[in-house]
Image (cartoon, rainbow, N blue to C red; front, top):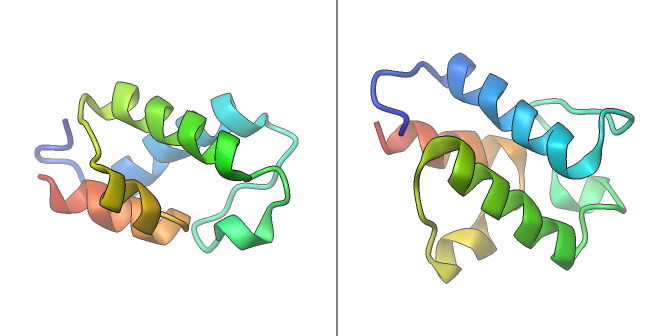
Length: 82
């Protein structure tokens, strides 16, 4: 869970899940959007969301998953769970 975590701490943990899903050769940055990375297709999006659920101990609904299409939106959502 994200209780008491700063956005910077959430971002670090999102980066860990991102690198597990997409590999370390793909550039991670806080401004990255799904459209910016060819490998971030629908299958990898689901895998990334599952990795985030596991990392943060949360469950996302379908509408939330559909909206989480950038690192910024993901961090904002997870930081808002605190």
